[in-house]
Image (cartoon, rainbow, N blue to C red; front, side):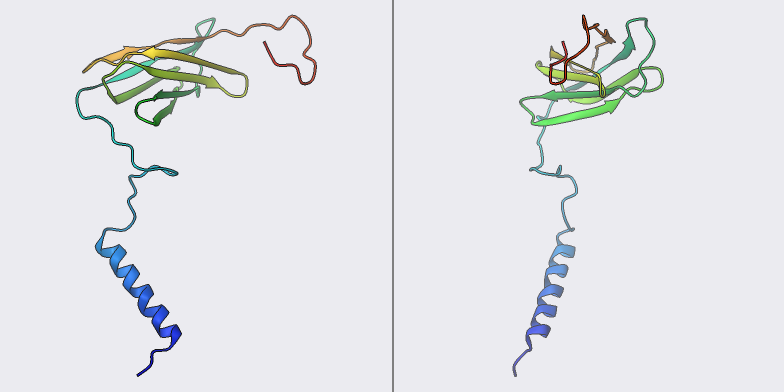
Length: 143
C-alpha cells in the first residue's frame, strides 16, 4: 500500500508537533539571537541610584544599562518619575559597566563598578551638558 506525498507530509507534521509538545516546546528562557547565558552561582547584590540634571532635577525615563564582559548579557531599566533606578540579583563581582542615556542628546558610561554580596551599590549620575563654542558644521562631530 503506497502513501501519498500529501499524507506523508501530514503524518510527519503531526509527529514533529507531538515531539515538541512532549519536550515542552521551545525554550523561552533563551535570549534572542544567542544561547542561554549561565550566570555564576553564588552571592548576589544590586546597583541603584538617581539620575538628575546638574540642578538636581530628576530625569524621568533615562535609559540605564548595566553589563559585565564576563557574562555576555545586559540588564536594562529606565529611571522612574523620581529619577530612581535599580538592579537586583546581579552576581557579586567587580568590573560592571553602566551606560546612562537620555536619547538623542546625552550618554555617559561608568566603568569598574563593584557589586558586593547582599549589598546595593549606589551610583548616582548627574547630566552635565557642555556648550559648543559656536555653530556646528554639518558632518562635524559634537564635542
